[in-house]
Length: 105
Image 1 (cartoon, helix red, strand yellow):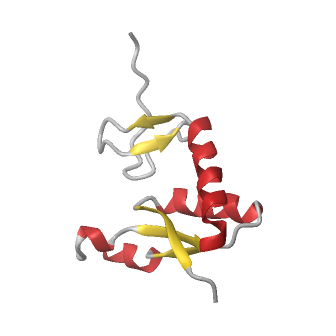
Image 2 (cartoon, rainbow, N blue to C red):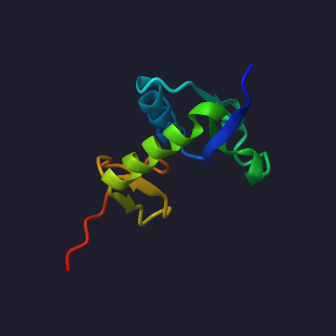
Image 3 (spheres, rainbow, N blue to C red):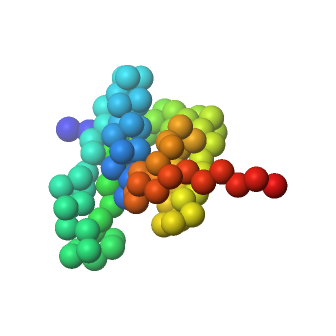
């Protein structure tokens, strides 16, 4: 079995699943780790609450390039209530469900 390498770690389960699906549609095998531990948020140490995407060592550079191109195309907004970053297409914060607040200059 080929060695795996951690591609990304973060607490946003929705985004992790989105990235996993996009990478898999490009033929990259992705393993999602840490999903089951999110039920322990508040009970477990913060460093154990991450969702991680792992890929085969041979596909790491391709996967990294794919993710970088996704990030460049997607502007984000920051929730004024909990300060989490959200994708531009979200009207509600993924973390606290607060509505997107549009600031006028």
